[in-house]
Length: 229
Ligand SMILES: Nc1ncnc2c1ncn2[C@@H]1O[C@H](COP(=O)(O)OP(=O)(O)OP(=O)(O)O)[C@@H](O)[C@H]1O
Ligand SMILES: [Mg+2]
Image 1 (cartoon, rainbow, N blue to C red):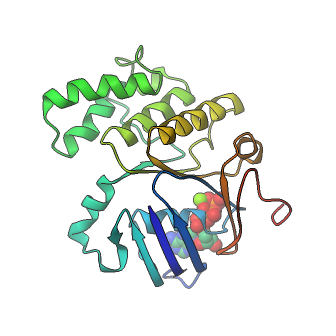
Image 2: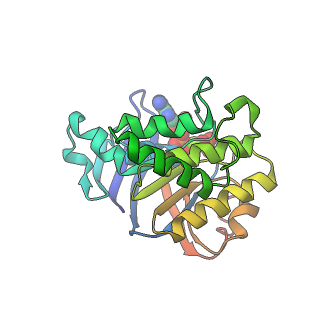
Image 3: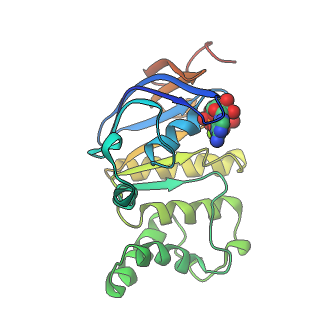
């Protein structure tokens, strides 16, 4: 879940990025965050994952108050989030299985649990036959599925994906969205940042549109209309 109350961000060099964001995302929701380049989408994502600090305002993510979060508490917050990036960020020298298992070892999961959970998650994303492959042996869409598997393997309550289909062709992009939709139907809250209008329109989801650091529309079912070209 997310609560943002009048969140503003001015970057250290003086660039204004967010000018009073009020956003509520409840447990179990699926939300598309759309808007033109430089509108502030990634800035919102980075505040929610606590990669950067807001300049003013208040925010709560998965029950944790970001205004009071100590640096030592950031890893705990991140454990409740699964983050997926545009450029996948896989470890090139590790197999598909190892890339996903690594995320579990990082949080101290027991080997017995890892052995059970990794094949289950790889099956969920449709990669049960690629466990021993290396990232360079996979298509872009398959690599992104590994990244999604890695994001969900520790059972986060929310997935945040910043342009997860930005490097994929339309068919692969649709496959990734369908996968995120499936993960959402299993109970995980999903926030997806995307530019891709057709993709958003092929789902009937809540769409939050941002322009110039402000939310300009928030509606369910299809893309924002003519606010942004
Ligand atoms: N580290 C930074 N320092 C200074 N300004 C920044 C920084 N990161 C982003 N900005 C500026 O903040 C504004 C919002 O950027 P942001 O990355 O949130 O946009 P975006 O909506 O994600 O764009 P895109 O669709 O191109 O990814 C832009 O004007 C950008 O130049
Ligand atoms: Mg961005």
